[in-house]
Length: 271
Image 1: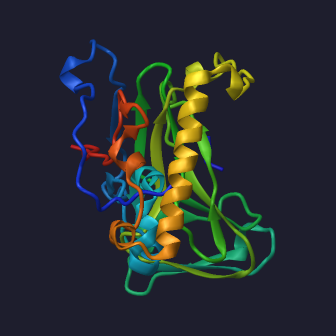
Image 2: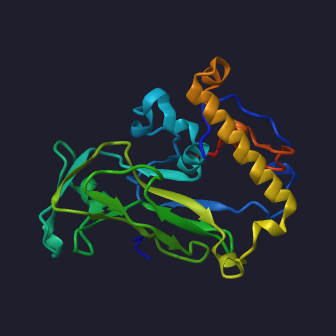
């Protein structure tokens, strides 16, 4: 709640003809303006790909899933400017949450977090007011594929194309416990969302048998994947050395390159 597939990400980049920003028509690129309200506003940086739990997988296996890495980097992180710990005693009142940050100015801690809603909900103040282009809002949530034991980030979709005041970021305790945030830990993640268009989407049901080309590509992919996995299981040296198929990461469709494919985000910093 805000107030108000498996490919390696370590593979070489695959060059594709993708639209360039300077080739897009005027107004096609949505704008994001970040108004700093507090000199102690939390830092904003482009989303980071790495996750500790992904690092800990065998041979960094989790990074072979390109959708994971793309989600991790498809937005901007707002991170804690200080170290602190917060405890929920399990009660529903505002005083049920207590925070501690030894050596930190208490005013700085109060400017960052508060118990505003009760019910085990911890509220963060970002120190920023965001404005987006008409029809575009911000999907506000915790950093993708990032978790803390005992507390969960709540999602919100905010109409930042008109909102004249800041939103807060909220986390809900999942049990009575103490949770620690370190300086640099992301507590909020923002991604632009064309919310004005979503109600116009009309999902339709289809039978894959009615699309001969797609059905053929699907069957060919399935056969290729099954053969690759069999060779891998049987210890085929060339397949073992390759480790995994890279079609998705490279943007390789069955009949050639995809018309548009991104395997690495290059979001710009807030300046």
